[in-house]
View 1 (cartoon, rainbow, N blue to C red):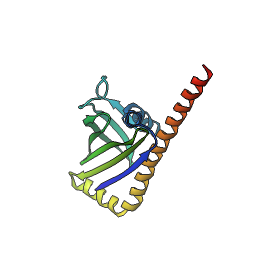
View 2: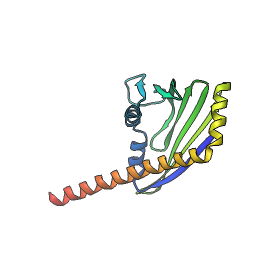
View 3: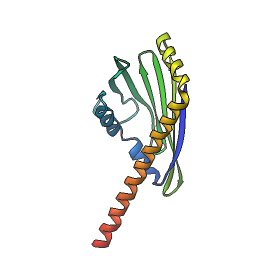
Length: 164
């Protein structure tokens, strides 16, 4: 099952890449929502960096292991996540549309490896329109946050220059 969307963000490519590849911020956000997230290494994110993630879903503790399988700054990255019977490949691609505008394309492809996972994917397919709308809304929200932060930072730099 696939989900994909793209969003144009009013911010430069390097700035957007720094934000969409801030894996520590994503981990902290997951922890605020009850997940247990642990990095498997200490070095800066690179190909091979992986996390061990535990969370509650449908009354059971689930585990998954996202691993960074491709990192191409500032153009994007690929994360392959394995879990109880499922594989999800997430790809983030960035394209500079202008010096201050970036297109972000996000795609997730999920595949089942077990009968239980196939049943889960089948139930998700029944709600695909709703799930796809939620996915697009999350990506849109991330884009809006990045745009707002970039404007605020730019504004504070301009104000700082006019004061000095």
